[in-house]
Image 1 (spheres, rainbow, N blue to C red):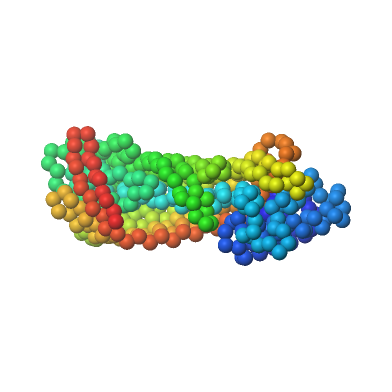
Image 2: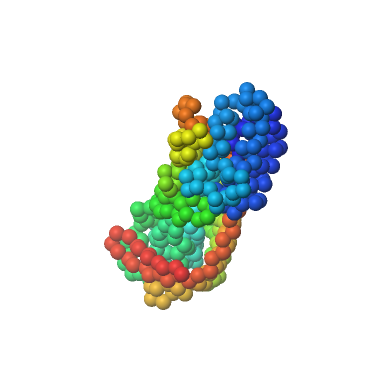
Length: 406
């Protein structure tokens, strides 16, 4: 990252030098605060040299950057650890916590939507060969393609994993009389070899602070709708559309990241008896809106205290590629399910670079600290091996399937 006004308007200094400063700091430092400190150590002398030669060569915003970095610069002979707490806090505020939050949010949202699709595949595997052959009109005895006694509804959550297959025999179920099930978050209907599902999910939670990423709280919800076709008794393929929103709030009033995106996914399952293989692949487009709060106080060079209280905003886009493959073996005993499983998920996201804009027109200290953030390439490869235990419970209202995964 680099300061917006310095990189965009400081014509006496080659842009390549600014890019080199950012690259050098990333390579030499271990945390974002140290990276910003290294950038300041190189940026401050460069700005000062230009200012000394010709004060009018710097814009007012560039002069503000010069004064701010001068307050946060190390004294001769000092290292990063010699900086005061106020200086480190100022450097921390100058970094972009929102940029790293973007990557985490896009991975989380993709995982939620994958769980919804893989949950649908679990239900499809529970269909019997006899029901596949029935292709009568909806409502007739030969077309009861909804959630049969051998295919209870399953629920997914933000952090949930794939429910196992359930094949307990439930007599006199309400599913014998209807073509689908309307739950709080999910609806599934089937007509012959064609099937349809609509699943919604909502989650809220937090992520802890790490040396390289900020902590934040989030609220997220998504909708996934799909249409699938049973090619044979053991092979089903389909396509799904998804829409999701995530709102994240960075700890310590650091700012906000709002994400919304749409996606398209091809999915399928192949199974023989209790063994199955699931797969999916998709593409999604996402929009990000960020707000970064810069609030700190530090000793001023001329004496007294400098108080910085600024807000910067930005908007950018991203494109994601998402792939997943998994397999398992479902064991069922009297309504209890045990499913050892393994899954591999891959996500590649390219987030476009963006330039922040000051929110509110003022020339108070810190008004020049808007950042220009380079493109981000996010790669996530997750492997999961586990065992799921579940129990199907039939009620007059719905079929519930609580499960525990380890």
